[in-house]
Length: 243
Figure 1 (tube, rainbow, N blue to C red):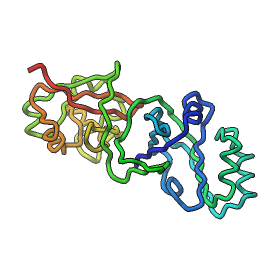
Figure 2 (figure 1 turned 30 degrees about the vertical axis):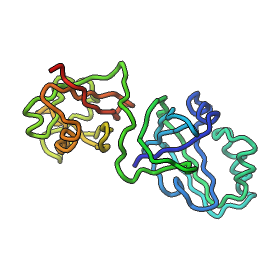
Figure 3 (figure 1 turned 60 degrees about the vertical axis):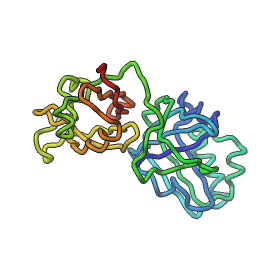
Figure 4 (figure 1 turned 180 degrees about the horizontal axis):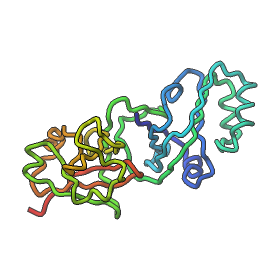
């Protein structure tokens, strides 16, 4: 599951410089992310009325309900050195009934993220459906492999020549029972998938590429470009071949 959280600029600045290590949501009703996020899930942070600026994974989560103003005041004492909430934030939330505290890890700066409909004041979105990406994200650390006619006919992507660019523990055996640790691939204008690499064949185990190829009009000679987001997550796009 992926999440999009909207933050004011000062809080996003604090996330990016490491001062804010816990995201806190206090609500009167049980709104997401309350009881709707698990450790390991990815969060994209969007600045209020602005761009995407950061991404992180949830490391540890605490949910509380039936809060009282007294309990909210205690939560402020217990966690505000990690939350970095201003006094006016806690004052505005004093009558909240539900709390979510999310410890963040692997924080990274970004400049793009999942495309969303107008949020109309919504401050947290859980993407139950696979998202589409807003724009291709160029980066100097990208790497690529060329599509062949055989790839298009067999709905496959060959990564043999670039396999060393992926973590070694993502390379598995020939059967699903021998699958290795999955990679998360965020496809441009497509779904987010998880797959490992079939080492003996040098291909991604996930084989349902036909719809994505067709959507982008992929042809032999086009290149599949992988841009690392973190150690196991990649943005994947198609670049046109020279022909």
